[in-house]
Length: 450
Image (tube, rainbow, N blue to C red; front, side):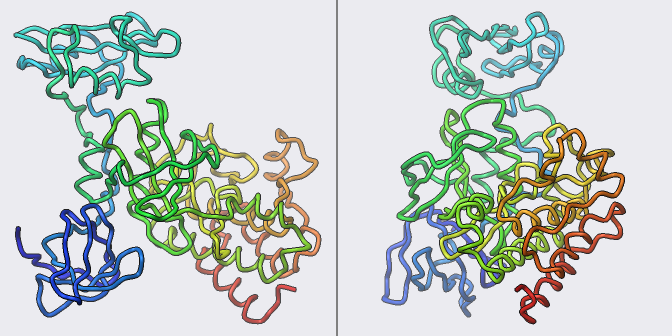
């Protein structure tokens, strides 16, 4: 084991590669896979002062832990790096040359649209096995059935089961990195044995969201079960490894060791979505100070994204969660991308999305600011759906002619002015999130929220 050369700063997260038993009362014991936070650098580069999730503090050996890193932006991760999409039989055979028994890839079938083909190099030639859908499952021989391609590949990796050979070596699609390996390398892979799934608490874009317990702490778990959402799972997890702020829902790790079950594990937000929280409590419970605090919480999280060149693209009260101690945190990073990335607009919620984003696919922090204005309206209307009494097809034409929603009942005029600033048709005229946060703090400090 090597000595750490570059000291890590206080606040750095690391993950244990080995178990460690205390040697003195000042040491901190930990188990493999446990996540620790560096508290202080010591004079001895071989030791750090760290704390665990329970708040216990002590010294840890530097060579027993690995720094947690954000997966590099722009990395093309894939849970199925052996999947090459629509290529022909001839192209597959060229990719599997020179022959190497057990080298394989999966492609979309050109002769049977909707089916797949498993291409395997075996004893100098390439065998092509048609994968068909039958009753919602995938099969090659109509004896073994699988929910998705990952399960199928896993099965034939472990056992040839009628194929010419077992699958030994994937032919990776050019430019892709195997997601499983990258999550392990960067310290974000968690162990399934440490997770207990308790009950379903919601449904997300990828599948069920469950309450779980990980090493004694409550967690939220997104469960991904099919190929169609697997790549979106990777995209969201990749973004979350790069984000760390008190007003963003925190990623704890991903579980990718069993390819038939994929999980994103995040902190548990006990009070659910902000829109449900607003609707269930209402005006009689939530006062102006509380509404302003939620607004300020979200602005701080968005200011952090703005400063790190990320655009959320789906900001709304349904995608903000509330913690046990009433802190609002932005979540659902499925559409979040670097500011330069393009976006398919078909998934976008019309009432929350800026005109230029809908019209020209022109996304920026300023399109997030537009959405923040809509979110402010949701907060101060206690969770009403925006643009009430206007048909969905009429919303965009009216907005592009300059229509702005009226202030919700009881909304302070100074807050409504912020909403209208966010809804400027010229994105360049909208305030930054830093400016919005400063204005909301001014309202708070001067108690102008009544």
